[in-house]
Image 1 (cartoon, one colour):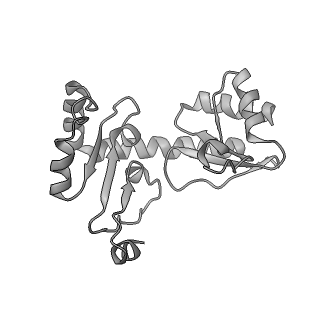
Image 2: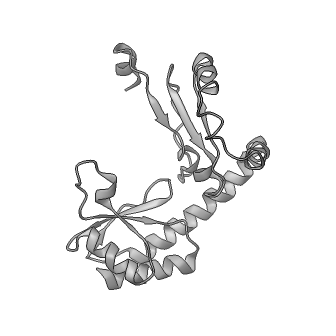
Length: 191
């Protein structure tokens, strides 16, 4: 893709917000993409409440963005920025702990949902969510039923511009085990 973009003089914008959440034992190295704009965030890799993002790009673009009228109003509060600076200075221990927790939670949810003929899924190699492919129920119906039982989920069509994915359900594995147990129970009832 990088070669195709370079050939046609297209700038790639790469979302790296989940890059640090590769849960495999040996993640693939991040390819170098000359001229790309790389976007990252602490809200996915560290904690959802720490909403600090960044852009890695050529220096001239960064200067242009710094001078943009929205750069100030859209900035995070200074205290959050200082917390992020401290975390980023020694991020690997934080990421290691986060990846271990997510791997355990993903595997726990996978074990709870495995073997049920009403859906299928593949354990994701990283990230924060598992996608269920429902065999009989529509995702919107399951979301509505789950909501009545105190579990908020999002149906696949919300993630598809053309409204497809009607039998796909996005299930986060970020909650603690007891909440994952509740989610699995609600899914069992809702499907």
